[in-house]
Image (tube, rainbow, N blue to C red):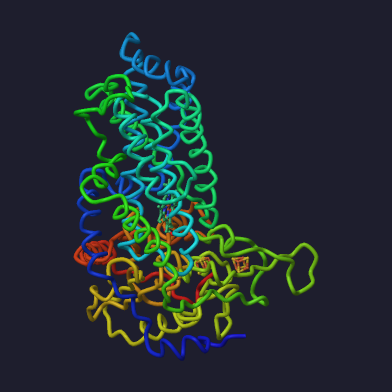
Length: 528
Ligand code: HEM
Ligand code: SF4
Ligand code: SF4
């Protein structure tokens, strides 16, 4: 049974937990994300929904691809004609369909690479994120194979160029007994190869679907659909592109001639000009090095993170931590107390993100419990909830007044220490979601005139759900909720990222102006 802080807390964080360092590249990236917050607003910022946008584009590709497949003549002779004829369909419906499919494919690759880059610059490939990272890597290869294979199905000159260039590139490795490129030279083999194209282009999305399923397996409530406005805006943009820049075939394939000038899709087909300007082997080396690097990245040693600890004597099996954990690190098992039907939370150390969101969700974390040492059902060893209660009471007592404000900040967002002032007692939690809402009332009853809660901007929570759960708990939509008897003018929230410290200070000033009423809130002794 832990006392006020476990061995980890005493050994690693003897005085006060310090927020984790942030790399320069992450700061630079956040500046870009913040620039996007201006026109889109934090909730609709596409950079915060890249995974969900990837899913949207995937489904747009599937739906438009199924319709195209119905219209496609799957023989080498008929394919060009059947796709080219789409341009004649009235109301530009065929043009819209073809363009939507092509631009969704380009968009998918751009979004996927942007998503990868975002996770990389934010350092999200280590520890508990190893699995989503490693399951993401094969998706890159599948996306390109599927995208490039799509051009072959048109069987126009661009498709021919890409198919032959790919075959020649594959032939530089002694993988096949007879060179693939030679197969294109004999017309007799063309239909057989065309069946292979169809198989590649249709088989890959099926594999991708499996891959995507694995990818989000360990992510609780993964965002697989963007907000409606963003989804509609993205689809409308693709349709507009399809009509303004129609995708047209580039003359029927003719294997007796080498195409002279082609309009290339640089996003999906960049590998061909890259091969021409370097060499086949150089491109192979580049690919192997890139994929090896991507696979090695999460295997590098990572800093040991403390794991949430369950205290069975204080766990009633209510499942709130299970519901709120953003990485499905908690499972419920029969309780060790032997009471029939009662469950106990168990944490999987490999999955735990050390975010503390479970502590904020546990009903036993309420500071109003009269026990001298506050033991809760689930606690963070580096920042036990009892330490927070003790430091809060001692800090409030030590403040001279006449006014006292408490700031519950978050290590990941704007730094709470930026609010340092004689009338401010500030704390930085691992995540805003770690704060049991009852601490706000407790601080007010303990002598605070106002309480400011802060965390990352909407959609930017380092632990995905901390900001959302905090917002919902404070507004009473989620348990544990803040009691409605707590006067609204005595507390305030500020969603502010690292670098937004000025916004945090200004939120505190607003609170000072609002909470400056003379009557003190009911003292702790009168708590019902
Ligand atoms: C093929 C397209 C991809 C799609 C559609 C996709 C989709 C998603 C989705 C929906 C999430 C959950 C987001 C959330 O709810 O917070 C996610 C998370 C993640 N993805 Fe991807 N992903 C793709 C490719 C990749 C690639 C290529 C990588 C890196 C190699 C990657 C790395 C990650 C990581 C590390 C997370 C966890 C983020 C976190 O813990 O906050 N993904 N992805
Ligand atoms: S600390 Fe976070 S990831 Fe770990 S069990 Fe608690 S809620 Fe889940
Ligand atoms: S929230 Fe607390 S009481 Fe409920 S299951 Fe989790 S640890 Fe147990």
